[in-house]
Length: 401
Image (cartoon, rainbow, N blue to C red; front, side, top):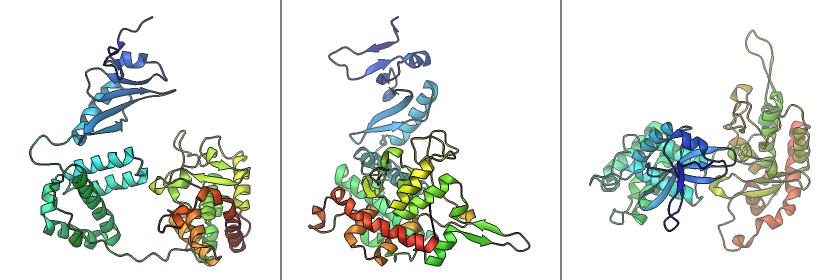
């Protein structure tokens, strides 16, 4: 039976299929049929995948196509959300110029389209705009560029109220957006006044665990006044969290990279692990130590671990993985301390700077000769190093498997 509400544009002009703007027609769309333009709603599309249908808004901002997936599940909600989202995305119609909030959104979408911005960086940019630049987001780029005293005052306020690190984050965002806008669409803007928005030099944190601190991280006993002894540490956690923390310890990878691991990223036969979600969108592979390979093999076969595509499935997000792992109540410090500990251990064991860069997923840029190294071809040469790191931790903590 032909569904008359679903039709296509004439062959000469057709670029996308069109569906009538009513819920019945949306529901009638077959799965796995691609993208459909909702008739009469500019830029609103329904994307029909194998098992799901999602709404997406596509509009041009500063001449570039911006795509935003909507959270709505019904056409009514999608139309309302699309109108609200477009209001935030579109350039102003007045002669007042482009505001900082609009420029930030355009910048984010541009970086995402070129896969040059990680999800965590996108999240941080939006957070900084809302949290620290709320009183600036409606200022035009022209006004910002001409207001050197105002930039200096913002820099001073952020430093005094929130600290040098936060100040650096926020000022880097404003500077990056401003310079990008000047280079792309606003050539007449004055140069960014970098001297009045100078980036603070922050010494590296001495954050690596000492052997005693690492033993307390793994297992510690605490006795509150008048109470019973309480066991704390990673060793007391459930199987999923415990395996997550041990993977962080034995690889030194970033938190988000470990959280997003799929079983397709873990080759237990070759004992290689691939981190696909990384800072700067630079996936990398490293050899698993024998200890980590054995640990993950036992973990995968455990009846306490539910079947999932994710190595570390979430117990609260249906079909999702662990996110923002923290266990401060168990006496476990921030995950990034393990990255510092891993790098310090590499230095202690005599690993070369290039070996450390490859094992930690750092860029191999920096000098001409390093740029000639094809990191995937030297994975096996790094295995003795990862085994040495595991042996070091085993001496400190005892058996981890």
